Image (cartoon, rainbow, N blue to C red; front, side, top):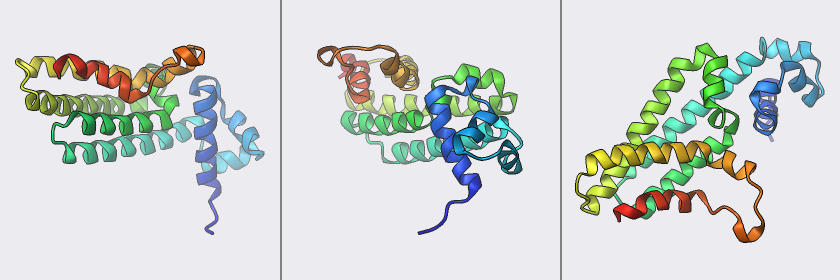
Length: 192
């Protein structure tokens, strides 16, 4: 079994802690304490929390791009396949939920990520427009171009905020929130 490097371990633990507590309140000292290492050991690998967040953002960015490429290259306009693909996008967003659920805050606190984040969200939106357009064209929806843009915006909003909604609202089992695919399907329903 391969030994994990301290640097990689710091990133793994940081992702868990940042997802659990939120990026805005966690410090690099908190991360060091969580790992039971000295802040100096953490600083040996990363110059501070900003560098850790930037590294995790790079992983997030790469995973979103790979996922989008896979989904769009296989897209045929089938609603169920599209929803399954969007659920995979949702999984990536939830894996890095400290980013996806605080995009505005990350954008404000990390100027070095602003341009990349903006480009990524624009690319995600354009990919959603393309996927939605395929579904609508297959379903022979009139005026699909304008509707696809609006629907893509709603899908992006749902993808980004779905996990946060589930965590904030506490419902009993009878009223539990449904899966991301069911929420996304409701967006498509009027066009099917």
